[in-house]
Image (cartoon, rainbow, N blue to C red):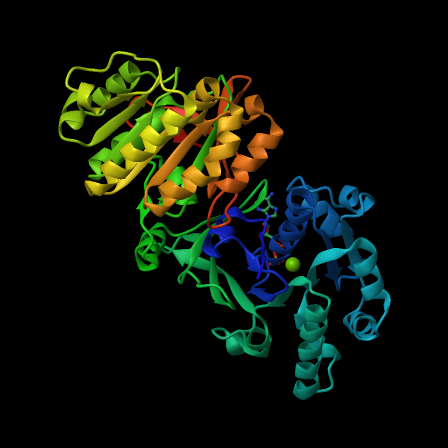
Length: 470
Ligand SMILES: Nc1ncnc2c1ncn2[C@@H]1O[C@H](COP(=O)(O)OP(=O)(O)O)[C@@H](O)[C@H]1O
Ligand SMILES: [Mg+2]
């Protein structure tokens, strides 16, 4: 089953990527909690980022206010409508149901016209007034859900909070695939915090508990509760490899997934040295062993200095068998490292591949958990692009099969779109960092949990890990 990003990054984290494709989700909350905003955010970013058209059904007589309210978040709905990516439809609940039930009716026609993948109905609470009794009301809801399924739409059904069945969400939540509750909680008698709770999500292991969200000038921003992230990483049985950078680890649900291959895509101006040094230092501190192929920008001397700043001695780590190097440029290493440096500069491609493979085999046979840092720019420069297209997929699969986690540095803009697309497909995750003007940015553009982040600004700090994402 596919996954549909929700438009709210933190919610995607909670849901392991988003809503199950084609599911019907009930969103319940008191007035003013942000249901309409959540619904529109789902459609707006669906159109903008995922290229999926959407329909917003409102039972308000005059939806002008809706356009104005959403413009406050910077969402120009009219523009999306002109581009054929959104349709705001205003009708009464009766007419909506009539048109929905009728095969080839107005609603279905519009959905097909725009090729809508998403729909929001705001709000289904109004169905109750149109229905003759509880039984008819239920029949209507059941029918609606079946039609939405048939049309293969991922649907958000907005529901006003109902004091009668506060906990369960009533029949609506019962027949839906998912149920999300928005709330306002009093905190310390004074403050009110907005909380979101996922009470049901078919096909997804959910993260229990209330998560705090805020309404910002860009819409809803949800901050998944931290302790839960850690707990779940353990429950998962999947090891997480912390990057040491708080915001990034949070995005990655505790860190890089162990036994996976990640690409770090940089442009030539971006400073990634601290990032790499922070990860490697974190790994050896966690008792892991590291195999590194350093770039011409990040020299052995650089790494030695950055380790020293974090209270680590590269010489000692080498002597204790915790760090090994593949070296193309016969550069000097700190004293005591010699035995752990494999000079490969003079080897031809076949010899290089065989020697590295053998070395990795013997290192892994020695036991322990391994982290590989591999500078692909150097490999491309020294071994050629063809070497990478020919062997990268097989070699990274081999490294993964040995249970090693690998971070591969490369520069997509330099190696061209074809090879980049190939690398991106081959890896489990892609983190991008680049410089634009006076700022450096970082963004997770692919990850095993399906999370794609917004770009963060990279700030340098005076203490390890020497950088912070804001
Ligand atoms: N730019 C903004 N920044 C912060 N809060 C906002 C902004 N615009 C609207 N809000 C708040 O959002 C809430 C309305 O959200 P809405 O999605 O209409 O809720 P609901 O549909 O659940 O009634 C109100 O509490 C309002 O104060
Ligand atoms: Mg509303």
